[in-house]
Length: 498
Image 1 (cartoon, rainbow, N blue to C red):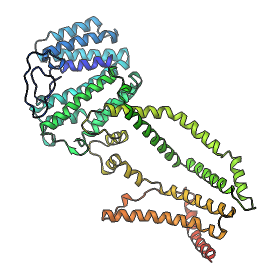
Image 2: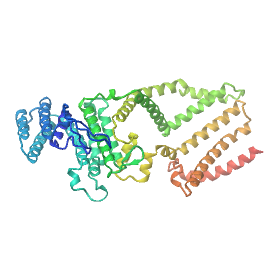
Image 3: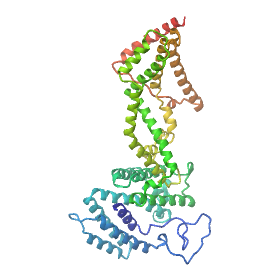
Image 4: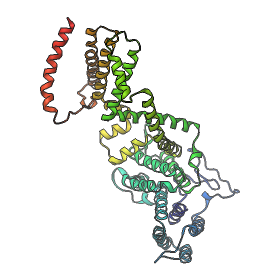
């Protein structure tokens, strides 16, 4: 209710800007006619809200504000009473000139903002969110009508008033502030509403960095049709924001079956990504290697023809440590059950954000939005690549070092246990790890060579950068052991070859 009050006060202050668009107004018909259509004059129709003149709209907004105040207002020390506040609103409504009216509405706004904040910080913050979001749509749309800012356009690239107003409304710092307020008030608004508004607000901030219609077509700000399309989208976006946070719209009811299917697919990808991140940690990699060795040992032990008992010993040791398929799966299920609710909430919030998105360009990923907003209006090439090409980023960050460790352990376990099981000769088993790691390194070098040839230049930034750093105390020892191990390996390879 405080949010609805804040929105109405913002509209009241800008009453002469609300409902003014850049298209051709047709008498008796709300909205803007299609491009190229001839205006059609209709005299005998009932007026709608959009066809009210500024004075009628001002009167309507005054009544809305007076209606919104009593449920949320309470007398605070040093503040106005409800009767005094209502009298001030009526006094503003009686003002004869716009300047005097705005000055009095500003006083009412300041009294409301301070009084609601003193009474309950949640009321004051909700009121402030509404004011910020309302002005983010009202002022740019008024500028698109060729009024206000258009009379004194800023110089340079931002000469178009509508573009300049959008840059101001969706500045990165301003968006971060409003998003912080929304996240603070997440539990006070309907479920998923605050997250969806914060995401779409950030989407507009990302879009204004390189505004397009669709995926690729840049916005021609001098083109009236392009401005009208963006303006209509922004108006509709403001309606959706107001509806979500004021309780007019149920966020979940905005979702269709396609959104839920997309959310489920995204949830699976997110869980897979979390699993991959866990494997990137030291303990995660260690547990994975132990499970992998156990799986190889269990598989080969079924057909073992050896009497040495190495496989049986390994299986018994891992079992005594509690490394079994049942215990591992039970741990995974317990972890997933704890993460299921917050992960699903995040995916539904993202689905609601996509349903609430009214910009002429696609929304994009939430991670990309926050990444580009974090680096400002002019992101560096590295950050923009991460945001706009996540697949390439994932490929560049392929954990080559950890994959090499996994490959070495797996091939060694296969060689040792397969030889013990009588699957392959013992001499041949020693070549399995060596051939596996050499093939892996050749694959990495082939990738780097391919990228260099495709780019027709050296492209080190596309190489796989990850490496495993040794502890400081082990580095001097490693420098001595590396050449010794290399020579030993060559001699052992020569011996086993013969």
